[in-house]
Length: 155
Image (cartoon, rainbow, N blue to C red; front, side, top):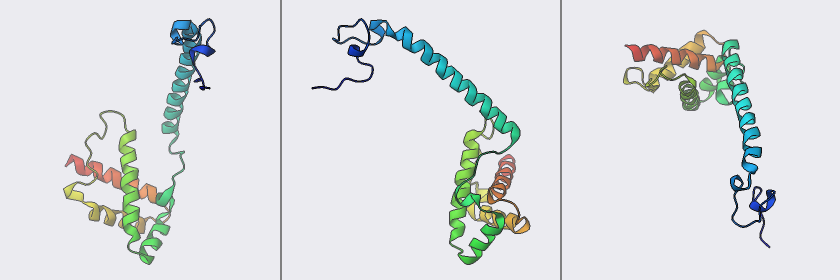
């Protein structure tokens, strides 16, 4: 006995069950219009929510190494210098996310690893920034690095 897919011809009213589609049975309008309204409502809510979040500042919860404070970053690096690479990898991913969230035309082509400000220099920037600002979150130091890279791209 074959199973019937959710929107099969057999489930639509007025169809004989042979190779009929939802559109061919007249159910298309009954299903598509409410679905379209639902999708438009969701998109509208998402768009307005996103605009509200940008206006209010950061409300998302940062996870991973970036959730650490600069003080914790300084301590982790002092205990295990190899963890620097992990923090830098997190920073590169976070900055990549920033670029992807920017509107079209803003920061397009920004190089997160320019020859004039390579990864070692970026790591030193983060270490110096966190040494001077232990109360900051590490992600804020990464945002400062991002701004610095934006300046680097303009030179």
